Length: 499
Ligand code: UD1
Ligand code: CA
Image (cartoon, rainbow, N blue to C red; front, side):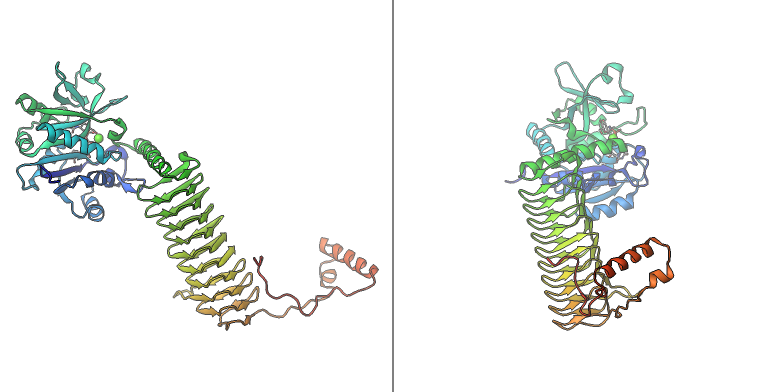
């Protein structure tokens, strides 16, 4: 379908947002995966405008840098002094060479706005051949907002800012959402006639409506079905309110696609995340950034995943992961920490108090307890015993460790990289390994054990230990004087668990 009108989108983002009390420009504050500005641009994206102009001012360089990331095709236009929304649009249109078409203007701080709503506004505007159409909403509390003033026949007569309004106008609950569609040519003409004769001494974009109405031009009002979409953000309390509303919207959408969310009030999913069918999200779960959760995976309670891929039917319990990959059917936690490039293959296990960074944990391999795995490759079905440390850093450089398929590393072992444990090899518990272990061999670095008989009674007389030792000696003598010393073939290897 060919578009009947050329379209330009103008986003107003030059204001400081004083009430945010922040070093960060208001429009760059984050909200579930995008900045406020990012949300507005995402809502406008599907309109397929021929041109998108973003008016920047406060924190212009920061906003431009952000724009280059999220909307590289948009043009940033500088409004050096914030002389009002009308002034901002006038400057924006200096960057628009066209003389006809539709201009959609959106305040940069309305992140809950949906594409469908802007689309409906633009369709109504273009369909009626209006000079200007404003998105309006009936709100419970209109404090601080511009009011829609209609004439006796119900036509929009003007938009009045609260500070310029009469008491009767202030009582109106139909407000200007700060989202508009204009006929480009008639907008340009009207902007040239704006005055600064108002309480703030600014050029108000909203005055365009009164000017056009007085000139007998058709101006329209499109009322939003859900006023929540039009909510702006002026301080951090409002930001928190918007975050809750967006959380509920996002959670509801995922539940409708077949995701179980056990406690929607404590589940926070960025708009950039995807979740598969029959996944279960337990309470206190945060899914952020480019995270994806596969079908039938179980995530939570108490999990934060940032830019992390969780495969189908995997489980992640009370853990934190960033930039990690968790394979199908793999299991993480409780209390695991996966750092960037931690990659767990299918059915791998990373258990309690285990940190993994820049490492591949092979299919079915296990690192169940109290370990640090850094810069390693662990083969299929290898078992890494409790408290194994991959000693990857010599103070200057990082080195890799390789553990072969089916290898068995005993508890409390230091693998001092670079080092390789061959396929099917064993490492004795308590070893500090700095040389390779060939496939199938047992590597052991422990000093032989020696027992000094009677040491406690001689050196710690009168202690709890000494009394217990005395009792044990008596009991052993009573039971025929058999030896209690350790046998020669004592166990020197062994994980905490062998399954
Ligand atoms: C504006 C509307 C008001 C509406 C409200 C909806 C006007 C005069 N008033 O009021 O009717 O109910 O939005 O939220 O337009 N900006 C610039 N340059 C400027 C001034 C503002 O880029 O010189 C940007 C701001 O960054 C912001 C947007 O325009 O994104 C709106 O500005 P703001 O000062 O928040 O306007 P309001 O007083 O809220
Ligand atoms: Ca505002």
